[in-house]
Image 1 (cartoon, helix red, strand yellow):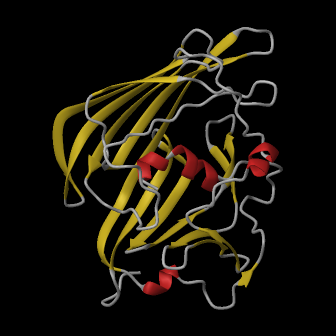
Image 2 (cartoon, one colour):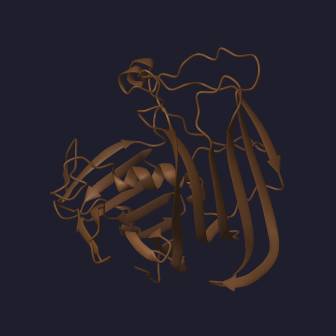
Length: 292
């Protein structure tokens, strides 16, 4: 994919899954100037009784972002089809928000109902990774419901190695200088998502670099139908196995000849009845990780 001509860029190979088990698959990312290409596949399945994985894979997919065109394209390489949409995405209208069930409940309290505590610790450890000096940083996030809250408690710890690598595009949305954003998750109540008055408490300097290796462990509490609550522990791992910097083939960011424009492409395994796109999980769950 690297050629003697073309603009300088970045090529990465990224593995995702549970620690030591890359069951979420492998992705390739190419970034050059104001263009980005991501290659991936969705999968479904799980572990069999003997502990081995049994997965079904969907078609080979590609997402191309072109700032110069103000467009994002998704390609199904196996079917030679693609879709297109404006980029950055246009904000949802009020009608679209209501149709998708995203309408939040109004804030009814003058006092904070939810506390978000984020603690960032630079361990001081350093090591060479792909020709860059990587720093070891541990970030702990706590979601603590206060009086009047409708949100469940959560806690996560991200243990990662970061480098300074700017791979954002010129058309990516930027936060105002000096501002930091934090996200929290809620469960729908009577079809609406509770809106909290949030209190933020941050300790340490927030890490803004690019993580080459990250392990996140989470504790999430959720209600059961009988009114009791259950806590689940989960973990995920992301590892960059290849990082190269140099000229990229401009053709990587073009729609191949013969591809047909359609309104919808197949993204999932044929056997999947209903599965959340890995592309959507990837974008939503790891937005801050990849600086998308």
